[in-house]
Length: 247
Image (cartoon, rainbow, N blue to C red; front, side, top):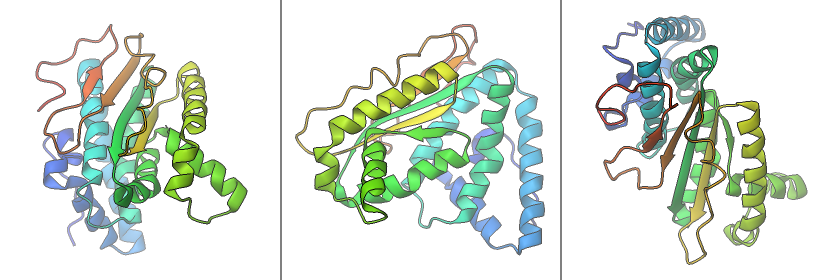
């Protein structure tokens, strides 16, 4: 089986419109253990060599569409496997690693509402996709879920219970993200709120570091299917290439 990884630009690695992450995961999942490891090493090395050749402007730009494409790709996944996480670790993980090497930090902030049918799946799988990509993950609903599981074990957390504690979860998530900002730890802040009549939670703390030197903030509050890029605030000292974050 051909396990060579060849891509003309880094954008092809996460292109949500082409299902690139799912295709990469399928390729990995079809391999035996030794061949899979060799293929992952090749993918990591190939990605790292391309990433290292980027100037700061293109590295920052790449990170802005990368994190948004990972989020948007989630909604097109037809399966979830270790291949998804391994693929993201070998590709997006190299971008985040290079950002840190150059003194940059990346924060992706999602402010989304979802129907109850989709929310549990998002809370289960979306955070680990970003963790595999090298980002620490927090969010109001994730904080509530974690607290409930400490008290009740691995029993499913009801949506009613999560909504009853959403303000507490918001406070905890904001405390955590404030600490990560101070530590300059790259992160994904996921506010995955239930689509109901409750007042929206503030994202002010999550995006508070936008415009600071060495800091990239990418914010999405529109539907992943709207065709519009996320809002990106690059470091003030970095000149972004024209046409970014859209492609």
